[in-house]
Length: 66
Image 1 (tube, rainbow, N blue to C red):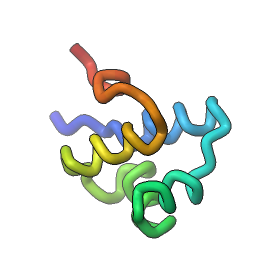
Image 2: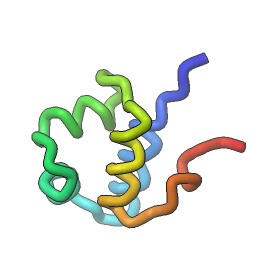
Image 3: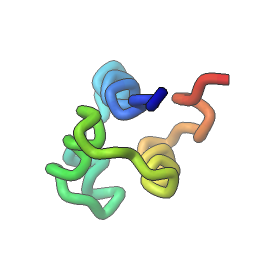
């Protein structure tokens, strides 16, 4: 089973008022790339997941199931 963490992160960002364009710039990504990741259209690599968590200021474990 493939975990779709992108939409979970998207909901977190929306709930906390974090803008996608801000995060994309902070991560050094295009807005289109981030949008595809958050909408589950592009697989989220481990290194990208770590960068995304760092950019939004959350621990890596926040979006992962035990």
